[in-house]
Image (cartoon, rainbow, N blue to C red; front, side):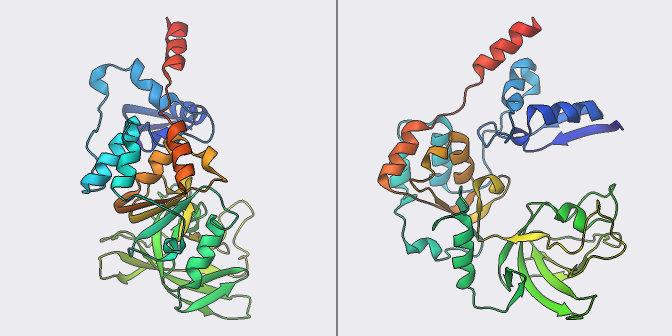
Length: 338
């Protein structure tokens, strides 16, 4: 069914494939369409170059280039982002002069800021996401519990996953308040009705924003208070067994709607920001690093950035990556239109 809007805003446009964007335009009618994104960041997993190309088919008055980043006040970070965006000749000097580059060593497992993330491309091997999450969680000595093979500890940083979009809502018309890729932290948990059919885990989670005067009566979570930083703390339960009220196609309350997130993939981090960002690039995956992946990774940092790689890997990456150029595709499209 086609929906009508006065204003339709689409964020992170670079991640939307050509096919999905076409479907969206076919389903929506609007008076004003606002497209927001960064053409230098990671492109859609499926083919998607429409957002970069569309500016060539719009009047100049419809295109606004936001040249000033507001994520960071660090002059060194801002200069590095600008250089990498353009891949100027002094990128290497800025990386080394600003002490952004470092050799792989155990320092990566020492937390530099309360709000920190480690970014990788691979899940396996020593410096993969799975191992790093395991090592970092081992250093957390606070209260813990197991659910199957998954372990949770008070203080663990988390990211809500795809199932969160449906987990907390009660019908398809509701806009998710707690949604995929929202940052949070485990505050507490308790198991109720242990070894009974109604067994469930109650989680208290600090999300990364305040939910002020929000009516949550129609959502499956409660706001139980605020942290010292003003962020809201929510409470919800994950069942051990599936309820008879749940159908096979609907959302289930038996799946934990978040993942442990000391480390995540660079793709998962798009749209997120942290005070401190550590990036690991080993010789096993350096050929997978594109300009958009590298630029997306380094621009997640607000205050501190450290890239862990060898000098050889650093040189290989910087010598090879360059901003993508869609001018050929634009020329073909214009010839078809004309």
